[in-house]
Amino acid sequence: MTKEIFLLNISGQDKPGLTSSLTAVLAEYDAKVLDIGQANIHDTLSLGILFEIKSKAKSAGVLKDLLFKAYELGITAKFTPITLDNYEKWVNLQGKDRYIVTILGEKLSAEQISKVTEIISEKNLNIDAIKRLTGRISLFKEDDYPRACIELSIRGKIEDKSEFTEKFMQISQDLDVDIAFQEDNIYRRNRRLVCFDMDSTLIQAEVIDKLAELAGVGDQVKAITESAMQGEIDFKESFTQRMQLLKGLSENVLHDVAINLPITKGAERLINTLKSYGFKTAILSGGFTYFGNYLQRELGIDYVYANQLEIENGVLTGGYVGEIVDGAKKAEYLQELARKEAININQTIAIGDGANDLPMLNLAGLGIAFHAKPTVKNNAQNSISSIGLDGVLYLLGYHDRHIDLM
Image (cartoon, rainbow, N blue to C red; front, side, top):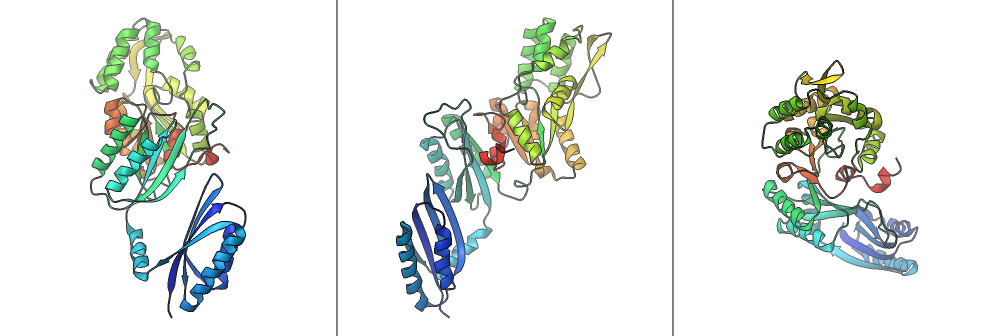
């Protein structure tokens, strides 16, 4: 029996019942739907239906009836015949590798999108779908926290992923936009554990610097902190040096510092959403347990691993209790938590800003350098520098409507 395949493209004003009316016509001719997709921009519909008719005699009738139905509905219908060979070639493409490219910023320009999609085109990759993940933008009302994000689903073979991501990184630097690149695999859709660095990630401060100011050694400690964050000196060495400078500071100041910690924009929105969807969260910090425990209570964090201050007779001794939590230890804790939660390491997310975060950022299934130094951004899987911590939700594929209902 002769088979014919047609692609029906519908465009026009969106209204209830369009898909039902058109598929009802196809049903009368016992058509088989091979593929279907729809997009809606500003109440304007774009609908595609790929269908098969088993008898050539029926094809003229179904096309005529679809045209009549489209006229009744006030929409435009266009038909494209598809050969069986072309259809089979298209079917065989479904085995190709799939990736997700997320473009994120306060606002997105045509130039930013053009440059990203140009790289995709140069590599002979196909864009299967484009989705907007952020809400609609008002042109009259000023948004106190502007965010814009689109997600591209792409397909094809990438020979050199590092070259691909380097080009995205260059666009990111030149055009002030975040571009995340991920494999679209089962792990990407099933993350379960999110681990945060604390200082300059979950909070917008380096606690040790604040303590140093109160101890009168602020400039000395800040210089050591900055050198450690840039990766210029070993974290353990820098930590020991800074702790010695805090010797004699009263423990009474710790509470006041804790209650005034500036929580990063978007952190509460992110953590509340993660908890609503069943994620586990952890602080893995080279900072101090006193402040990590405070944030745990305030934000509902599940686990805290950090350094414990040594206190005797109400003052800091300049020492610490237990092992120093450095970069290697953070990665070790990440693995330990994955085992404890009985999940694959690829189901984990790590977020941090410093050189000592790189081991866990590169171990996690999704590592994100957050408002990080250039050295860290250049060596991490992905980065966010344009908006707050809740930008992580867009890298997970959540739309604002999934977030703001929580």
